[in-house]
Length: 124
Image (cartoon, rainbow, N blue to C red; front, side):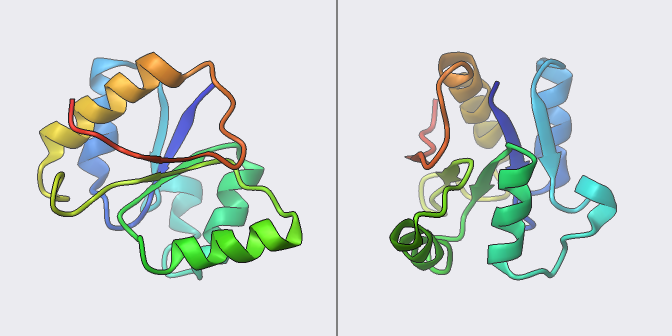
């Protein structure tokens, strides 16, 4: 089942609003996940932790994450999935759009396999 880990650039309010609308969704903001243990950690460590927890990372980071994924792919290392969000089409302060897009994605894609999958989140 699809579960989300929101990177530190996505407000915990997004997770709260998603849960209030669909309590079955597993969604965690990095700020509070594992007691905030991973705040400030390198992206590789966060990706490894998300993979271990079988959570798909939701991130705006389209600069440092892709090179990590490229390296992991060359090494045959899998990840649990990445959802990229674009600053232009869905700014971080637009909680409503983020919430609606995540809800729609979960409804449409929750049963699909997410290992090594990349997706760009679209406004609903």
